[in-house]
Image 1 (cartoon, rainbow, N blue to C red):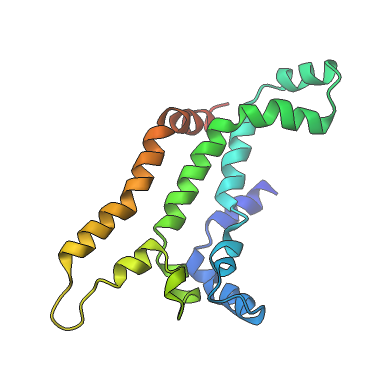
Image 2 (cartoon, rainbow, N blue to C red; image 1 turned 135 degrees about the vertical axis):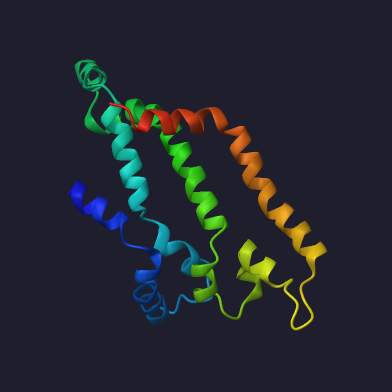
Length: 170
C-alpha cells in the first residue's frame, strides 16, 4: 500500500488536471470555491509525511496508553495527535504555500468570476497589454501576497523545523 502512495507522488498535477476538470464540470462546480478546494482535500504528500512521522513514535508509548486503559480512538486523540502537532504544522505550511502560490489549477477552474481569483491570478491582472506591465502596483501586490506566508512561517518556525526533522527519523 505504501508503494502505491509513493507511486502517486510521481504523478504530476498536470497529468490529472483534465479528468479533474471534467469531473468538476459535470458536477457543476467550476467557478466555485469548491473547485479550488475539493481536488486537494486528500494529499499524497500529507499521507507520506504523516506516515513517516508516526513511524518515529515509539511503540512503548502506545503500549503504555493501552495499559492505562485507553481505547484505540482515545490513543489516537489523546496521545498520537498531540505528538503529531509539529508534523501537522509542517504539512500545513507546505500545503498553504503550495496552494496560495498555485496558478495552474485556479486558472483552469476559475474562468469568469474575478471574486474567486487566487493571489497569483490577481497579480496577473496587472499585466499590461502591448505597452508593458504596471510594475509598481505589481510589486506592491506581490509584497502583500508574500507577507502572510512569511509571518505564518516566522510564527511557526520552531514547530515547523521540529516536524521536518522528526518526520525523517526512526
